[in-house]
Each structure stands twice: as structure tokens, then as C-alpha cells.
Image 1 (tube, rainbow, N blue to C red):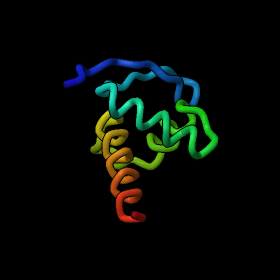
Image 2: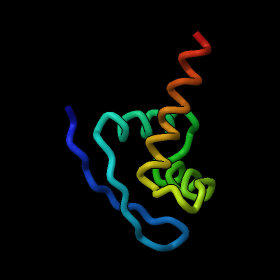
Image 3: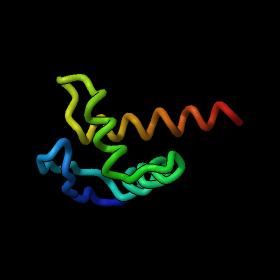
Length: 75
């Protein structure tokens, strides 16, 4: 099982951090690359669309889950 790693990113000009297990981080990076964007850009996009009551780390995990599930249904 992968431990949680804390990472920092700049979002709209301010530094923030998120904590993810390595497999989630790897998949997030793969999603960003597939979309032709930086990882920081994808994190910023997810941050802007997340509900106020959801923390950034949870929103990132949920985004990865949604993308993986969507890919599984394409078959």
C-alpha cells in the first residue's frame, strides 16, 4: 500500500498543498498528460469546480475515480 505524500502547487497565485497516495498522483498526472495540460493546470481546474465543503485532496481523488470509471465503461 502506498503512503500519502504531501505536494505543493500554486493555484491562482497562492501556494497550497494536497496529500495523495502515489497511485492517485500517478493517475492524475496521466489524466493531465492525456488532456495536454500540466498537472498544476488540472489541479487548478479541479479546485475551481469542487464544492466548498470538499477539501482539495478529496476532490482530486474523486476526479481520478470518475475518470477511471468513465474509462471502464468505454470498454
